[in-house]
Length: 212
Image (cartoon, helix red, strand yellow):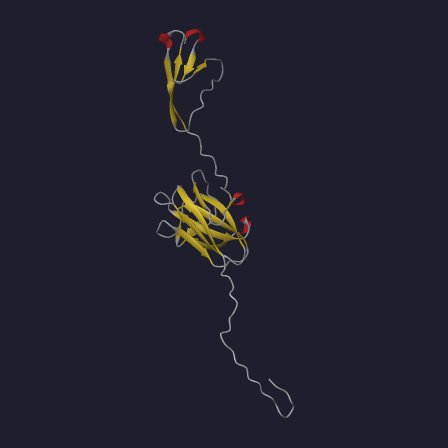
């Protein structure tokens, strides 16, 4: 310990021994650290113990419906549901229900004339379930959902009513990484009618003088 006196050491840094608590670190979550007491008298050196520091994963910003992130047309979002909590909404879709349902929320705004395709993909480590709702967070109405056997989940909305729609995604069992896409399809442009040919015929009524 030299002139420092007795210290605690983690192999990288040292921390003076004082009365009360001694704070060491910081360390990365999951890192294994051996703490030793390095005494002035080497014969008194001892191992305090080996510790694994595990910090909880921070909650995603869109863990709750009220904090949903906005989706943009043509945008592809890469993310993970790690750290997400279960909202408590019904997770049943297609006859199956997730027992974990650690979900995330997104929104998009429909203009009343376009159609929309919401796609969720996450193979091989993500068995996605996709829900689309209308209404506010406290009165969500399930518009459609997708829990197919394939890795790609899709909900297609054909010219839905104008308004805000909430997208809810989850991994059927646990958490994982995913890609979320929103495709917006504009309505077809109106083409003026073209009359190829026409004929006219005049008729007169000799009794009253009217005609067509």
